[in-house]
Image (tube, rainbow, N blue to C red; front, side, top):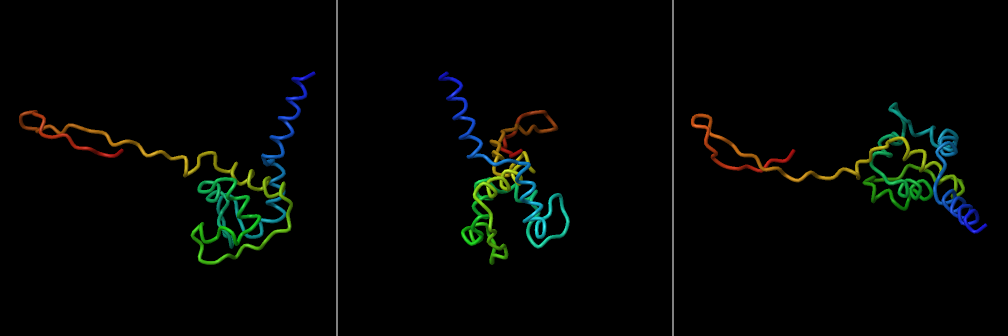
Length: 135
């Protein structure tokens, strides 16, 4: 009896903390598609593939909920996004949907350490110096 109860509590808590991609797609189509595109095209706001590539889903949800809170931090000179009359769950859902568009995120990139190579003199095949290069 104890294990099923714990599993049920975990399931309920994770579903309320995380958004639902399909529900988020619906929120996108009803509220965001007017200004934002997915996979290119012309829109007033940035394409959501680029947003998904550069932003954490928590930032996306916060910005969608209160656009005036982060527009300067995101590098925008002004805010054109309206405040949307959505519920917290809908903001999480749309952020989950947007985040799902790009499985690889820009902020996940790790810088590779520089490698040392040995440059040889072509005439006598001797090592002259070691140079560090970045790959």
